[in-house]
Length: 250
Image (cartoon, rainbow, N blue to C red; front, top):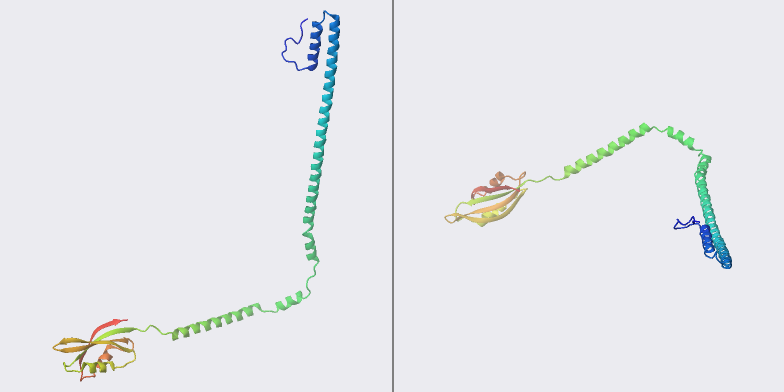
C-alpha cells in the first residue's frame, strides 16, 4: 500500500507526522509480534509524553498572554483616567471664562448714575459757545499784533550796515622849503564825524621836493572827498594842491 504522504517533502500537520512515524515502526517490526508489541507501547508512551509537553507549553503560553492582556488593560484604564481629569479641568476653565466677564457687566449695570449730572447739563446749556470763540479770536489777534509791533520796533533800532571807503591822498607843498612835518600835523588836525586818519609817508617828487601821501577811512554818508579837499586846501601857506590817488570801498 502506497503512503499518501510519499510525494510530500515537508509536512506541517503534527498529527499526520506522528501517525506516519507509528506506521513506519509498525511495518518495520511486523515480523516479530513481541517486538511489535513493545514498539507500539514505546510509541504510545512517546505520544503521551509529547501530549503532556504540548499541554504544559500551551498553558504557559496562555498564562503569559493573559498577563500581557492584563497589563494592557491596566495601562488603558490609567490613560482613560488621565484623559478624564484633563477634560474635567478644561471644562472648569471654560466655565470660568464664560462666567468671568458677565460679573463686571452686571456690576456696571447695577451701578447708579450720579444725581448732579442733570444739573451740570443745564449749566452747560447756558454757555454761549459762539460768543467764547469770538472772544478767543479777539484775544489771539491782540497778542499777534503786539508781537508784530515789538518785532518792528526791535528791527528799527537795529543799526544797518555802514558803508565805508579807504582813501589815499597826495598833498603837495609849494616848494622844498615847506615844513612837511607841520603840514602833516595840520592835515591830521582836520576832524569830522566819520573820518579816521591812517598812515602817512613822504614821497619824492623831483628837484628835492617831496609830497605827503596819507590814508584815511571815511563813512560815505558823512564824509566826501570834496569836504576833505576844502579843509586841506584851507592851509594855503603849506598846501599847493591835493589829489585822490585811490578810492576803495570797504
